[in-house]
Length: 326
Image (cartoon, rainbow, N blue to C red; front, side, top):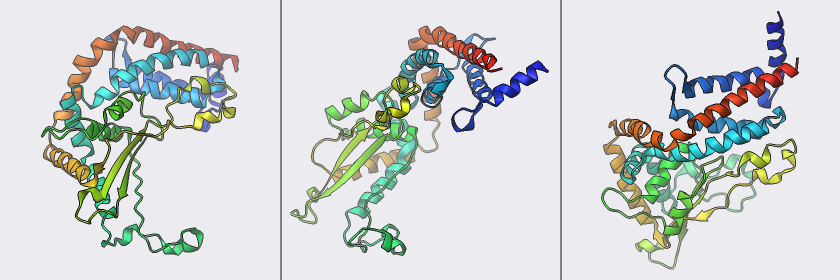
């Protein structure tokens, strides 16, 4: 009866979005069992990003648990390991990263390429991209008949990694990267791709140039890793007073100067063709398996025991806090 009563009390403690303390404990316990196989004394390194995501979530949204000290230690270790493993999920060598990127994101590249073509074609009217005149009274727009050229693509972290890998690494056929040296450095040094990570492609028209001059349209590529600030300073009870936690990293131009739209279209066109050619290939799965077995384990095994101890500390702390609530 006592055990049942304790479970009811623990289940009644509400956390972020209605999660209970019991559900939080089970969430971490499940992750722990998937991360570490006690019988084999082995770690599943593919679970490291899950550890990082979970600890970041609880630091940001459940600071009232009083686990800031324990979670901070775990975050610092998980962050170092995630920074090493996550980018390598998309290949280890430049050739691997480029080939995996082409296979994963060529549909997105095809969509962007098509939208660029529509945006720069004056005599092509596509009603799908017109303003909805049914809401004309609500729009503070003077030229309601114009075409909308802005495109917003909401996609996954994996597609952001692969899109940037296509942009920064040369193709198999020798096309050089479209990113500047400074731009590559900025992408390489991005700590992680967080919420609201952005890749922006801006299209400019110089009407002083002839219509058949490729220099009439040029593009500029910008990048921000989003809300990449560490959660360590936002995990206290007074975090609601910290307006800086909503800030995203500033956008930086990462492309070379004066890239024409035709150059970008040709660059994407080659990647799209190579991606389609390898659509049914198992290279990606084989590469990732090789990566996990041969490349990651040697570099981060020394931190596994520390990670296990930190996880164990969370379970002990949550259990003690739950008992005090009885």
